[in-house]
Image (cartoon, rainbow, N blue to C red; front, side, top):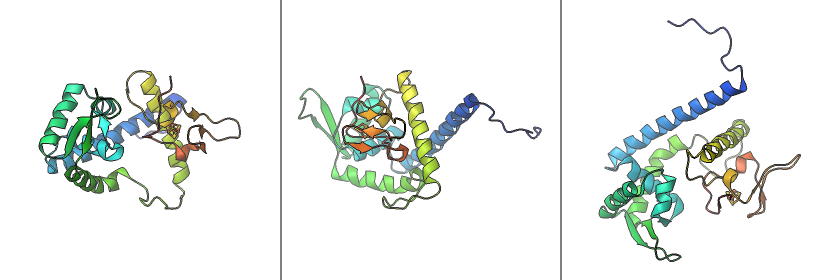
Length: 209
Ligand code: SF4
């Protein structure tokens, strides 16, 4: 048995940062395992389930964008799309904006399946109250700070080339960082962006050059 620690382990900023990443990684593994369990019950691969989730959130999306968001190669996503198409859960069509691009979107059956899956995953994915109008509580402020820190880490990994797609505020051309005494702002939507308002997946996101 290990001897009990006499002093707290986190004694430096670097140590705290490492522990944060360890904790996020642990969370990611647990969520991945919960998703795999649900996917198996619905006869889906993990990638198939993630595709349904992404299409439910984004609507019609280009195949290339889905591959980038889910961090898989084009042939891998194409196989997963074909499987879901055969099951009648999604359809493919040419993009109206650019006829060279193929987009996919959920069919009615796909939307129903995605809705059921999300209903099952929501208690795991949403640790707080699920009603949008639920009042802030004592955990809201630390959670908002944690959100900002995790988004900063995602941005760091994107800059290092580890993450390819990041549609959150910190990598957006419309994001104006906080200045002394003033909140960060979204210049496109003309709204303040305190940590609690930062978006993780934003439809209006435009990558910073
Ligand atoms: S457009 Fe979206 S991602 Fe960009 S700053 Fe505004 S809210 Fe954030």
